[in-house]
Length: 112
Image (spheres, helix red, strand yellow):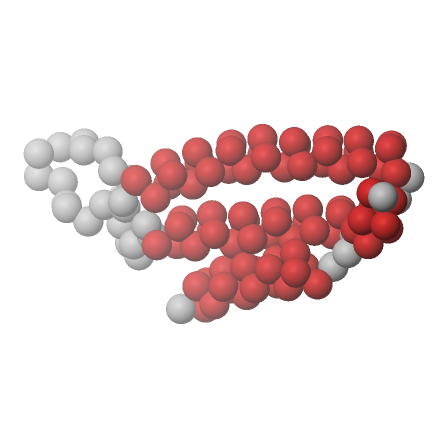
């Protein structure tokens, strides 16, 4: 139960950072925290205590296996998250080069 609470806490802290912060880097860190929390939550959902890897070694092997589908989904989500984080940070760099600030309120004022 404690790992699930930790995942929920990580998601809530990330959402707090996204909603309340005005610095683009802090918002990007909030997005990453939400992503990591969701990935951990999916990984913990597929976990079974004292279970084996889903590889059948013999016909008489026990049927207590770990569910491999959440693990595969998390691996895919990690790769997609890495790509979106790279795009987000590259956009932040371009915004900083153009406006010389990372504050959202200042960027809105400069929009004109």
